Image (cartoon, rainbow, N blue to C red; front, side, top):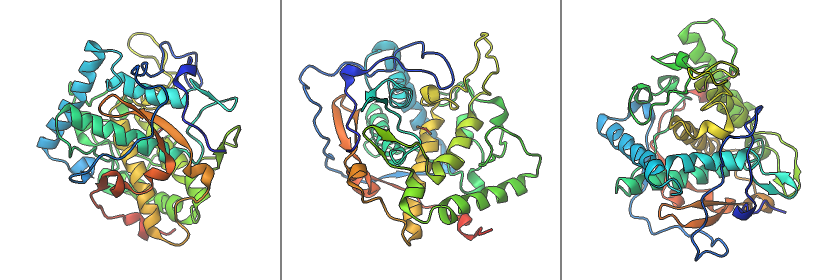
Amino acid sequence: TPIPSPDLKTCGRATISDGPLVPYTCCPPPMPTNFDTIPYYKFPPMTKLRIRSPAHAVDEEYIAKYNLAISRMKDLDKTEPLNPLGFKQQANIHCAYCNGAYIIGGKELQVHNSWLFFPFHRWYLYFYERILGKLIDDPTFALPYWNWDHPKGMRLPPMFDREGTSIYDERRNQQVRNGTVLDLGSFGEKVETTQLQLMSNNLTLMYRQMVTNAPCPLLFFGAPYVLGNNVEAPGTIETIPHIPVHIWAGTVRGSTFPNGDTSYGEDMGNFYSAGLDPVFYCHHGNVDRMWNEWKAIGGKRRDLSEKDWLNSEFFFYDENKKPYRVKVRDCLDTKKMGYDYAPMPTPWRNFKP
Ligand code: C2O
């Protein structure tokens, strides 16, 4: 049986991964009264594809637009804390779906470590992008993607490193600033090596995760997750580099914040808080792009055909504050969903070890 959309009425407290209860509720705001059961989502008519660009290469005009959209989202937190389009409410979606706020089939819902990972985050970003576009009246607004599979993108995209802007986050590891090269394979340990060597290691690792270790769908997407039975085995890309990028960008677990609080990896390094860093959606843009790139390699690299996957459901608020249920089967083609990725070369394809 596929995983059904969670029921908002049963939403409860969430727990910080490897920590105490989340000190606030992650549950979505109440539904509008005219929604008894959440209807299924239909794609609105599309005028023009939204094209997601590599974050390291966007121009100042885009950066200004993006910052404006995020700052309007953050303003909603202050003026209308229960507006589902607010910045915190949007971040709480990740917390609710990943930190045990919902019980489904007798177990805590967890969209990571399984084949729900790619489709859940694709739908999440889909609505997030539309909300940002709506807030700045730009129906073609597209999120940027953190192009960490290309040497030019193997560092924090510079636009996120400007203090005082709305896409800056103080709860990031300070070590990641000023162009530090990212180690896509590290779970926190630091290896002394040259920047060039690190980049070439990253490309080798991308080849391994995209080509060698993911010749068929279950290895790429992760293990089946059906009602009452979740074996928790993530796909190749979810494990590496997806997790290392989270750990890298978040504060070090166990370190102390200026106010004396202990860090649980905030923001990027813990599920409950990851969505509070705008770079999260940029990181997941590239994770999502890897899904398309993986299929483009060919062979047996196709979407899963299991009904339990195709018919799994989530729910989200759209940019008009209306809740909708969505199915995995409707998110397999990004162009049909109204967006695509500006192409970038994929040099890792020539990095066969
Ligand atoms: Cu839902 Cu990158 O984690």
